[in-house]
Length: 228
Image (tube, rainbow, N blue to C red; front, side, top):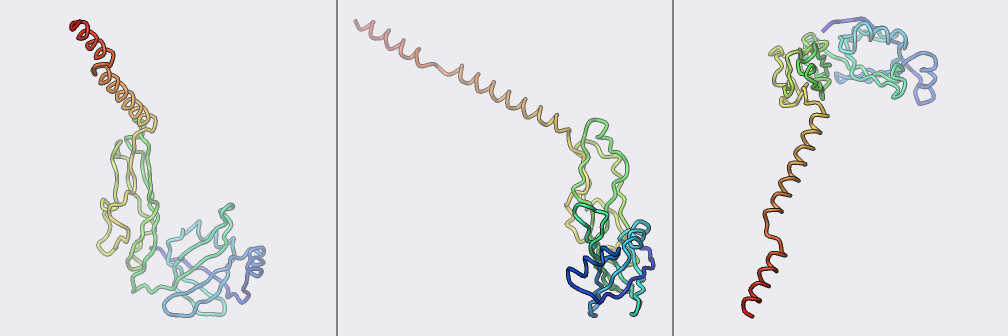
């Protein structure tokens, strides 16, 4: 995991009105906590922080320089973004770490390549976008790339199929699906319709094989005529 420097300022104003004022001024309110130490309110320039994220991403060990305070080794725990304007940063959480102690953090999954099944009309599905890993900070990968180019229709990749370092523990369940190529939806609908039609035809044939009630009535009338 790479390391990068980030400068922040101590924050002394609190409350909704003050945080809104900070955002209008181009600042992002944030907090720093962890390792049984006091929680510290901080703020950082939104433009600089966006550039930092574009350059290093969210999975990075940060050497944080706090104005008027001590330097800290931290990682990003969470970033809150505006639900409509995703580029607008609302708040950030940083957590202190030690390079000698394991941490638990999420890492994004990146699918690489075009599956074989796509050429046959299959649909690539990726229900899992990230993994939760537990390891030493320097062993934590920035992301995990997964080659899906050999996937055909019906093929799947599970967490258990991944090969990571023995020092890295995956916290998610091993049977969870990362990627799969499913049949085209139109083809599935056609198969369902064919099955329904076949079922209806079988039902009609079974009905035709059964004796009808008028035939029974006719037999009874013949018996009566014989007795007369």
